[in-house]
Length: 555
Image (cartoon, rainbow, N blue to C red; front, side, top):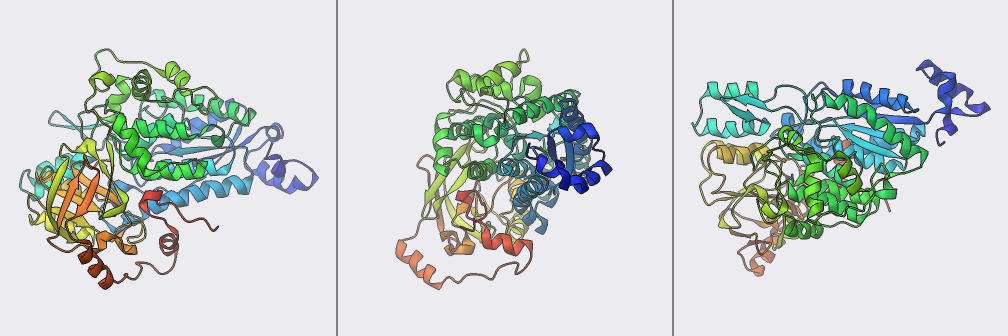
């Protein structure tokens, strides 16, 4: 065992003495040592319950003959930091979490690793770290929150964001906004639609890095405790067979994950995160893969933010296994790909499959809600390296209008709340990319305010930042290259005509190349927002969105 370097032999007596002090007994030195990264925090609901869930996980690992050691990693709440300078920390935290997992795995020479995650960036962060660690491992998701309820309708956090716009437009009262705020989040768990956390949780099951069916179990559902304990047996098998993530993560595995995202109208953040995970696994994956898979994968799950049902209701209907079953039946997944259990994805789906009688959440492919998947990659003179649109959140496939140009989300939000954005406008928010912000913050506050004011179908938004999984409407993000490095979005001026052609996959400003060249000659780079510390290092090393906003390798 790898951990024998820590715990065996004459010279390791001091190490054993220290391990005895934290509860390792004589018989335990013969067990595989496992690191459990817990992204618990009591600062937000998504990860609030992970301290308790970790106890069930560690009990299951011990029952399976392993010895677990728990350690922490940071967790940033997108919902709390949204629309504030704190949102810069969100995507940065993905890299910090991955580095933390790698650091502990190498520092303690553990034989296996488990990531316990919940909020958006903790899922890809722990997954990147587990893959990078080079030992058997898996990632477990804390689960979705239960929906809130008010006046007979189910609520998620997105209804609160959109209520801000409704209040600004005078459509609801201050008292109604307060009631929505009070009732939307009834307890622990991640945001309750097919937003980023639930999208990535499903993607990890499709990849084979999480047990099929586990991640769909809600945070406070009684089944969560039993399933968490059972997961210990899976890791014990993987360690016994030296079955590591890089042994089963293939290009087809990643295409399965992309198909799962497309079929459920999932978050555009999955594009960034799956590109980053593929890099860790040494697998080729590009923006074009997302577009090609989405073209042939219909939307078969009626899930929020664009649809009707919450993630809790998806679990009741049959969970992720039901979605995968439908896709497998239509030949839209590679069922022969192996998973962390050593069995194929198709075998795991059969073991986990169930369907609630009369459920209306997941449809057969031949009765799909939309003929094409939820992700579209656009290119053109505004996005030479690409931009991403979640098509499941909008019915419009073409748009042309004048640019309303803002160099920060705050400036755009001010105009939206004052009612100064008009139907037909194309709101442009730039200098908020991976390097520019830095950290590529999400724009949920401003996009929700636009929708809440009733402008969702009438306004388009472009940004070199990104969007929450809760965003809906004609919102195009991940524009690359970003404004900070001199991308064409930096050259836009107020009133420029912008054309969006979804069918043609084009995003263009209607200006001659000569005019763009004149503006490019006048453009000057901006000073960095940070000159020392973590954010300065991140901004110096981060790549563009079309590469997953990963950090540069030294060689």
